[in-house]
Amino acid sequence: MNSKELGFRNSMIASPIKKVLNMLKKKGYNVYLVGGCVRDMILRQTPKDFDILTSADLKEVMRTFSWCEIVGKRFPICHVHMDGIIVEVSSFNTAKRKPGRHFAHDIEAPKGFDKEDYLRWRNCVNRDFTINGFMFDPFAKIVYDYMGGMEDIIKAKVRTMVPAATSFQEDCARILRAIRIAARLGFSISTETARSVKHLSYSILRLDKGRLLMEMNYMLAYGSGEASLRLLWKFGLLDILLPFQALYFVRHGFRRRDKRTNMLLSLFFNLDKLLAPNSPCHSSLWVGILALHKSLSDQPRNPLVIAAFSLAVHNGGNLLEAVDIARRINKPHDIRFPELSDPCDLNAKALENEILDLVESVKVSLLQMTSRHSVARAMVDYPQAPHSDMVFIPLGMYLKALSIFDCLKVSSCKKFLSKKSRKIDYESLARGDLPEIRHLFARVVFDTVYPLHLGQS
Image (cartoon, rainbow, N blue to C red; front, side, top):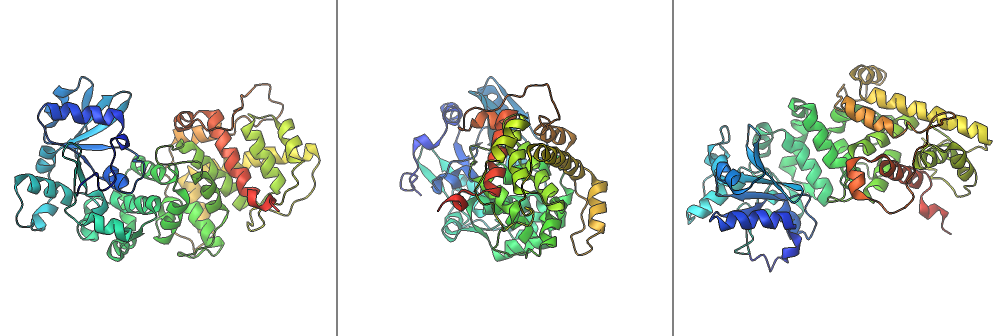
């Protein structure tokens, strides 16, 4: 396919990527953009990142760039450092030598292929989904599609390259990628692929916790958190990955294909509005949101208390200011959520005490989310709930999320700086800078409890 007819423009490709492509091309190697970045360009979306495939050996790539290293044992690739970012470069030759990948031998190559077509086709067959099987030659301005990826984009379907059961048994992380891609693009999952996602869901327990955290972060930190949670619940994966949140769905009779919303989904809906694939948040933000919601699910609170709590988080711990602003709120809260109790009038001191009580409750929830014993003990009380004691949030992430709320203390003499501007600094947000994290946390929580549309006449 002609890339210009697909609407591709040079401006879609980031400058560091162009430099890597040009340097390899000048050395005489074939170079392609491959996978999800090409899919996103076809869909006129901003790619989260760019992957390059080349005819050069990885050692030749190493010699081409001054700052470059080979990473990965199972499937080695080059990390090229260019203008402050890392560009991933893989080689046709590595893919050919990679042991244990025989899918291409099980599918007969179409007739009429020349050598270059065969190499491209073989590489595509070994990828995960048809919509990730595109190759784009930016110099010839040609997009190659050997596996029906364009047809599935038109149908808005996520479908594995080879039979789904075979694909997922080869790499169970593809199960989570199927969910992530479908959530982000708003695509459905093909019938055969969906069946294997359900049947092989527990195979994801073979993944190490670092990989699980990475996949969950891709789902919840890049603007498609609500859709990801819905799909994880629909296919039984939430039961394994986030047992406390699955337990919440069970308690409230939320069906697998339920179209309704709830407070957990609404929190992530409001977070999603502020994020994008190229503007993510630090993972401690969504961990903190999960902890707050678990606390409210366990013990419903006065909406004014939650509002004052979020305001105090935002302003760095100034409880007096937060209480003063909260007591002047005269708009209605969202009555759909049982996590919000009936509002009652509280004096300033009582409201401050309620804030501090909520802080301690959130901290307890954070601790429980990182304890297998706490998860297992909670599940015993609800035999109809899923059976999982999965905990993938590491100690460092727990401590980072905990720091969001450390500013809320009784008579604290320490001064915490609050964010002054309403504009989001996405670089600071991705780094996990506390003023930015607290700013977004407060916005999401406040907008969930007191939706803007409820205050409009």
